[in-house]
Length: 490
Image 1 (cartoon, rainbow, N blue to C red):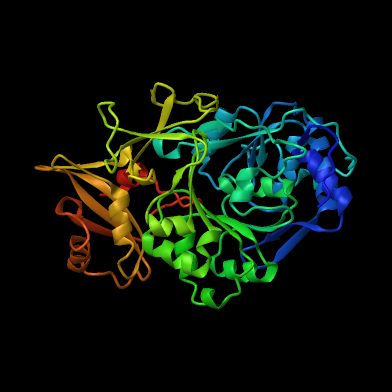
Image 2: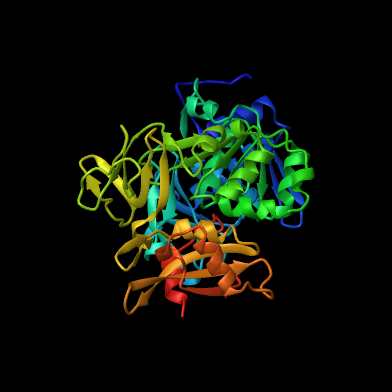
């Protein structure tokens, strides 16, 4: 494929312009609504529309380096607004457009800049460029360093905004990195985007545009549409989280779909039940499935391919660009197989940069931790067991919710599971399980759940109580907020 290079570094916006010149009528983005209807944007339209939108932002006073919060639903408007903001050199902060009013106000205060969205909290409405007919659609003079940041920390109270270290600029002769190649990415692929725009869906989509991907964007994740879209558009790659993986497996027609076009399945955002992982490795080639452990703070990256996972089930892999240490509470190194706190170090590891305030991460020398717990086997493979904040102390024994949740998810009819600690007069804490059921009108007997857990877990880990609910309140990205859940339980 021809890549037009005008200088050593090329911005996201310049790349869009080059691709619009190269193949103006080729589809850049297909936005798919929950009912299956589609809106299509070609490369020429993306270039012209984002130029108009960039001029509209400049007229409103947006300056290079200024933060801009983008709180609009996934779709064509989100893609155009992001490209436009980067053409001005802004720092784009994608936010959850469906956040509660109080959280919106906190986010606005934290970002401290322009907000594009609906309602009184926003400065600019979505798709404002469609009503400003005077705006020119010729190329704009771009800002030098387009950047982005991600909201994080909703489970610990006030949201924090972590600034992405890398700018959205690329080496013009190395748009595709070695890491991209090793995980199945290439130029000109078709990418399905299912994750929220305030999560990994954002980076996957816009990096995909730089790689000349055709983006098939689900405006809302609908499990039954997954197989249909992969088959129809011959999707090559996508990123997914365990919650979505479980829901897709419930589609009775998934195994009849032609999914042979897929060469890269990227999984992240927490541990995946082993039964779910095995099922996915039967649907897709193990060599095409990649799992990673990372974070918005970018302390390091740990990855594993599906065929490796089959030899080390439950692992998230070995470090690719960093060192990993498992540390006991007293600061000494843990032995292989021993659970401790995960510390990471890479050549670029440093304390996060925030918009507004944010916590310093705990450090041991130049190793930093996010508070995750794990263990490493004799071959250097990392296994996650939970977070320090979620550990339940049952009579002096540390119990990790993720292990129990994985067992509960194996029970027939359990759609989702969360485990939290409850005060106990003699043990200090007891294990309490909150379950969302496939059929709420047919709850399982607690003694059946108890027997299922006793066959797989030590006594301290078996829940002492169960509760059934319609929904556990996972985010669209599949994350479970144990602290919030604990506050709402009886």
